[in-house]
Image 1 (tube, rainbow over the protein chains, first blue to last red):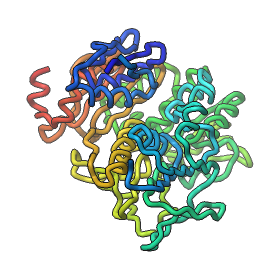
Image 2: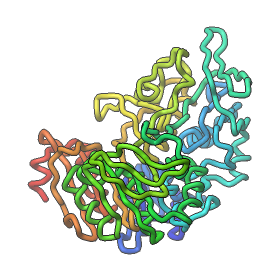
Image 3: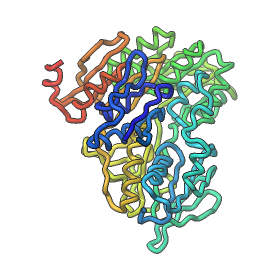
Image 4: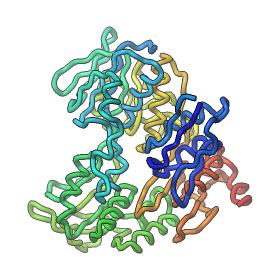
Length: 65
Length: 402
């Protein structure tokens, strides 16, 4: 799993951070997502997947490795 | 592959469309019919109707959630501009009837008919009086705002407070009226509610709190709002935001249990095999609350949709919803977020910042349990404390460790 985050689309809801704080953080001044790890371990895949789909701005995704 | 060959989804907004997207993502390739009352090219982001659409910083094109190509790829039997009027559960044949007389047979049905704006009796039928629920509602309101002088917003819940903030952001005068002593008071309580009263006042919103609406005045078009204390506010545009009611009349008499929403277990299943409900129209059992609760928020709609899609695929209750409710609100470019469901009478402790400051995080508790966390301009703060809500942590330990 390779996570992508589009800071241009991010509107700072932080839903991803609430779902998977190990993978996503938020810069509160810029109100933009920060990707903490691009390739989370298998144990975080379900959480990360939920985090990606929870984004109201559809700023997150995955790409093939 | 789902064990259900013919799935009908009634309601084409966020929750209904998310069920469909999840079904396809999980490999379902069966027949899906989508019945959508609103004739729009895609579901849209309702949350921005009271915000960016009203201020004019967004147009309808910015709000659509899917492209036309994405809709095509879902390979749906689309029935837009149509409304389901009744449901028949004959043992040999389950069908839904549409307002044009069409009868559709199904193996599984998803109720996603959402909610409609409540219209209190005082609204009457004067021109210039609006509710805000749909894109056409929002566009009509925005058009009339262009020439409005005295705007009155009735109801200082989240929709009303957001509309008032958007009117001020446009530079127009607005009065926000509510029987509660503070805006958002029924959700956030008096202490945090006072912060929002100050936020609005400092941005020029006129507040009329602790007073209700007696009647709307005018001849053909509204020209004033008579308050319960007898005073009259001049008004050439009135917006009423007093909550939503689930759209479930079409299920009356069908055998599907409804009580302020379609009653469901924690997997979205109704009392009828093969019939599920999601979003604003649904009232799911929540293990967290030990009761059935109805939630009219984005996060709830998307989470429930995922659970129902998984259960439709499995043909049994494989997934349940464990999430605690959460939502957000934007006013004056400030974002408020909440996890949990506190009562307005709960104790409040500020874990960082304070009312009136640029950011704060407030923890709510009662009976020595943490019941909620509210952040103002601080998603990180929300993230830091949300586990206390989920775990129903001890209130005294939580505030002791602050």
